[in-house]
Amino acid sequence: MSNTEQQILPDATANMTGVEIHVDHNGVSVTHDQWIEVDGETHDLPRGHYYGVLSGDLFSHIHFQNGPVKENGVNGLTSEALLAILIHRTKVLDGNFPCDENKRAITYMENALALFEQRTKDRQARGVEGFNKA
Image (cartoon, rainbow, N blue to C red; front, side, top):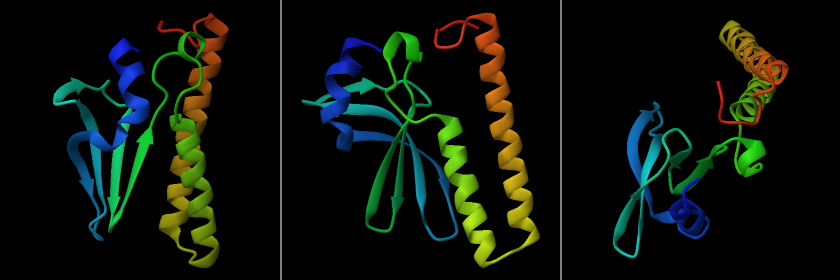
């Protein structure tokens, strides 16, 4: 993480802007935040780490882990954590409104989570987990 990111991001997340990557049928919009403006200066954000969700009048930031944990500590959400949330939510919804699409989506998300977990185990076995190494 650069010094600019360390100094700017904690206090200036409301000034992030990006590119819209998805809009659903209800008008909920997702942006991939790519820039932050501080004191009139625009700074690039690391790709794939910052997202914004506009749902009606509510705006939510999503901040993913930035940099290897062993080098930067835990500082954001992981893909695995987000998938666990989506799996749980879809199971709750399927309990109330069961359908084949929910069950298939749960299976696909559980498979994706298992693949991410297998990737982590492979990285641990190679001694590269938590470091910026392949």
